[in-house]
Image (cartoon, rainbow, N blue to C red; front, side, top):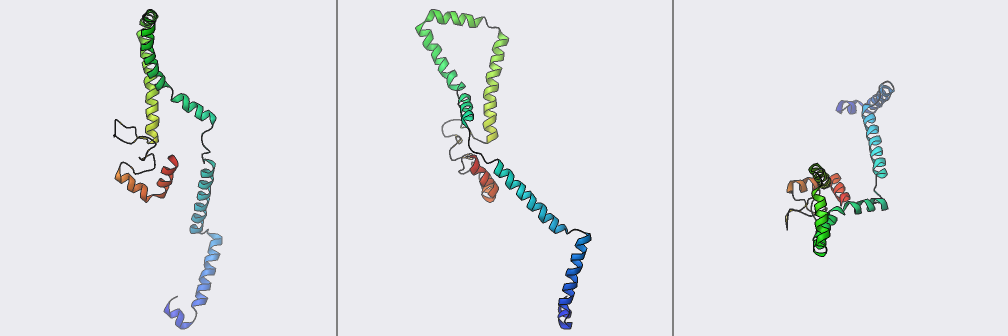
Amino acid sequence: MGLIGKILGFSDAVTAVGATAANVAEVFTPNATRRLELAAQAYQAALAEAAAEFQAAGPGGFDRFVNGLNRMPRPLLALGTLGLFAYAMADPAGFSGRMAGLATVPEPLWWLLGAIVSFYFGAREAHYFRLGKVVPAGPGAGTAAGSDGPAGGGAAADPAAAAVAADNPALRDWDRGRG
C-alpha cells in the first residue's frame, strides 16, 4: 500500500491479505506466468535430451569406406583417360578395335552415360553447396573447404555474416561443430 499504509500501520496486513487472495485465486485459475515457466523448462529439457542423443560419435568404418568410394570416380576418370593414351601407344591394333566397338554404341546410350555422370557430379556439388563449403574457382579465389573460411571456423568471407556469427552464441557453437 504506500505511504498511507505505513502511516496507519497496516501495510503488512494488506500484503498478507493480497498474497492470500492470490493463492486462493490460483486454486481456481492457474498462474499463467508459472505455466509459461514450466513450459520453457520442459522445452529446454527436451532440447538438451535431443542434443545429447544426436552427439556425433564420429563416422564408423562403413561410413569411411563409402566416403572413400565416393572420392574414387574423378581420379579413376582422369587416370583411365591417361591409361587409354598409354594403351593406344602400347597396342595400336587392340586400341583401334576397341574404339571401333565404341563407335557402334547407339547415341541414346551415350546421352544416358552423360546424364549419369552429370547427375553424379552435380549431386556432389549440391552436397557441398548445402554444407556451405566454398569451392575455389582458381588459385587464390574463394576459400577451400577445411581451411580458415566460412566452413573452417575462421573469418567468414562476408563481414556481415561474421558480425552475425560473433553476436550469436548458437551460430558460433554450430559453426565450431561443423569443422
